[in-house]
Length: 76
Length: 184
Image (cartoon, rainbow over all chains, first blue to last red; front, side, top):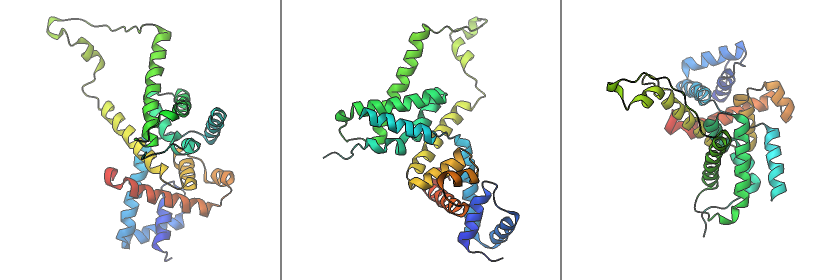
């Protein structure tokens, strides 16, 4: 049952994407009861998720980027 | 001696997404935004000899992109001719002179402020992402921004799920540190 703080933080990150298993979530929740460092990290992690959602970020696909690189190379 | 130097070979990796988000916030069309970014890189390459090295590479590229956005709107305007605005308005002597503002402004809306703040937020996140190691940045974007499944990312990059979560965890920890002072 006992996990390291680094492992707890990684589960916390995984849970931000809804991909932590129920066992991992149980381990994390137990950890959060006793570790202020981990609960602070968890709060920040949630905040980062909400900031990313709020920002509505877009990204170019890797194909688009490869195409851009190719065209730039042709020009230079 | 110049403080900054141009390195066009790394422009796409370092700045394409940042410029794309900047452009899309202004033209609201992904295809047009993509073209503007490409044109910005071309223009940057063509005028590289004029770069004095006083401004950071990204700042210089953003300045070019701003011109491209303005040119884009000018081009639309010249193609369409003069814009035609149809507004129904019942004039009254008391509100004379305020009609246009009344038609366009919504005093109860905070959308404008939110849009600007969200755009600043988006650029701040992009800036922090650009400081991540390349693979961490790629995995973070695929998972968080493109919303790809863990399996697809692992297949595409040839990594296992444990590696993926370690990279995302490290990326997120770095981003929290990078954005801490302003946004947390």
